[in-house]
Length: 232
Image 1 (tube, rainbow, N blue to C red):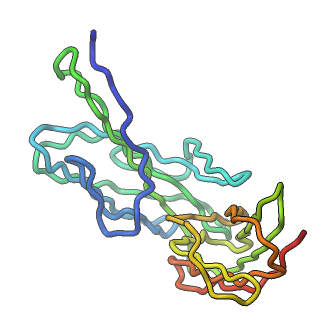
Image 2 (cartoon, rainbow, N blue to C red; image 1 turned 180 degrees about the vertical axis):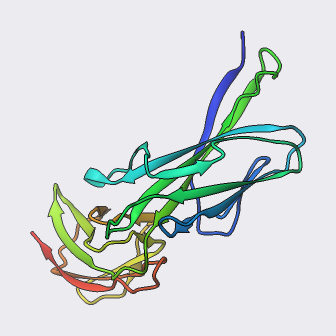
């Protein structure tokens, strides 16, 4: 094999922790909340034995049609945009969001990508990492406005959470009770629902006339519980 075979190992939606490590690269924090016009700090540490080169790409984040879409941002600035970190060293990155006077929270992803070292051995296989860090910018706390609905579609049950507020929801656990029965956990993982967007969970079909949904927004701490009819 000629040259380096480069593999993109991971695009990580990082869990709600204070720091995250992948290989020799450690980042903190894993989620950033910024005030418009005020700089926030982000730290990258190289805990390995060799220098690493990283590229930082601020991206605008939206969720049309229940999918995440990223495009290069003109309002989120990362400085410096390119890092070369020696073994055992830590680099500070400054982030600044220039959102103007918009009322709604601005939602971003910061892509932190490891670049190949041109001095690497010919024919070597390198596994590169890419982190995707949620970044939010808002002038203050926003009221929560969650709207749940459920409907039978194509023989399955679609549970929909619409975010009609001005700040993203962060859902880490979800339970559903059918027709007043005991609540059962729904596989959820980590789900963000941006302002004006919605998320759909597909549930096994049943004959329930109503659902009791139990969830919480991990960002604000607000409960998102609701009793909803099933549309058929």
